[in-house]
Length: 224
Image 1 (cartoon, helix red, strand yellow):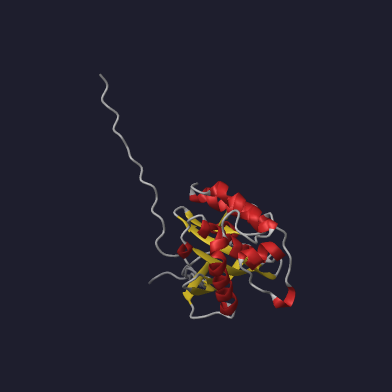
Image 2 (image 1 turned 30 degrees about the vertical axis):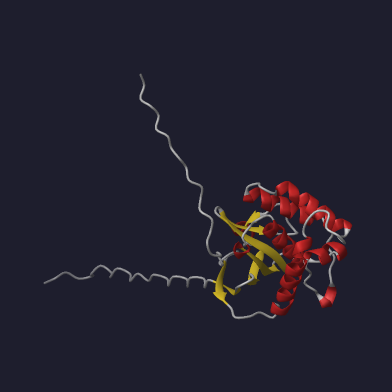
C-alpha cells in the first residue's frame, strides 16, 4: 500500500496592517498637511454624511447613483481583487468632465448626479470599496504628474496582500503600481489619517573612471 500523501495547508497571505506609502517609484515622507486638505476633508465629511443613503432603493438618488449601488451589489462577498476590478469598471463607466479652475472634490452622490474629473473618480472608488468592506486604511488618493500628458492627475492606490494596485479612470483594469511608474510621478497622497509627500531616490553617482598607470618602458640599457 503506497504511503499516504501528506496534507499541505496553504495559508492565505496576510492583509497589510499599515499603508505601503512608497509607490510609483517614489519615496514617501510623512507630511503634516497639503494644499488640498480642505477639499479632501470636505469630500470625506460629505461622504460620511450621505453614507446612510448608500443602499439600493434609498430616497432621492439620481438614476446614475441608483445604478452604481445596484452594480456594487454584484461584488459583495467576492475576493478583494474581484472587488477592485468591479469598482474600477463600474465607476469608469461614467463620463469624465473637467471642472476647470474651480476644481471641486465631490462626494459620490454629487459626482454621480453631476459628473466630475479624475479626483472625483478616485473618491467614488474609495467610497465604493469601503462600502464593499475594504479597510479604508489601505486606501489613499494619490496626486501624480502624468508624464505622457504633462498634466496633473489623481488615482486611487489600494494595498492588497499581493501588492499595491492603482485604480485609474485612464485604465480599464487596476494596475500593479510598478507598471505605471514610468508614466506617473507621485507628488503627494492622502488617506483619512495620513499625508505623504513624494521624492525620488537619488541616482547613484557615476563611477569614477579607473586610471591604470602605463607599464614602464623596457630599459634601454643593461646592468653593469
